[in-house]
Length: 254
Image (cartoon, rainbow, N blue to C red; front, side, top):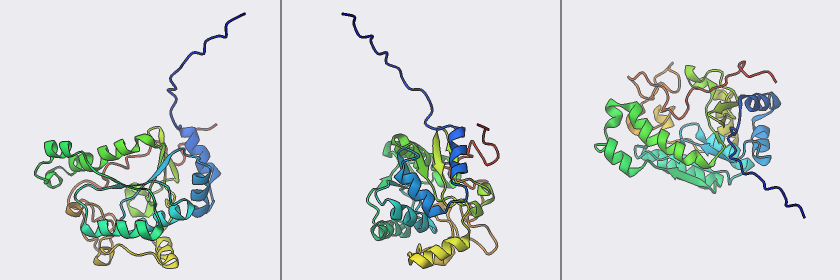
């Protein structure tokens, strides 16, 4: 009797997602309402294993509410850098309970790395990029190892570096999903009011984009909402949201 041919094991080296996948998603959901997009993406698992990355800042409640309405068990990653405002930590706990988020994960930096590279806790004052790297970028990269995609609250109006961001973009071989990319400040305010969502307690004091306490300041009239981040430095992003590989109009033809 002939033996069955032995199945050859192969390591799958194909990327999770490609530029073509991003183009298809942006085309499929063009003109579709935000709530419907989120519900469909999560229900059909179009992006595989997904996590929300949230700062629990001034506008975070809107995205978290939309996700919770679709699936409150969606993992939510919060970067607890050790430098956050106490008000942000309290707001995090309030929103998690209010919205029924059942999988909130507090991501913290490696204590050994902090001891080796920021023992004084003052790295933010002379090397903000390095501080963000060890307290945010590296911890998030480790936390994302089990996920295929992230959901962010980035919006095009927030800063010139975010103008024109698409709903879906390639992030390495993962996908970054920006459901609120085309929302305006008026859209956000209307959602806060219609859903009776609590505001971040620092917003009333003029903090319109809220990150770590040492690197966040009040936004002055006429400034863009992220002007209060790293004031005085040539820096507008922490590093967890690098330039997307694929921008609108650059998608491949297929």
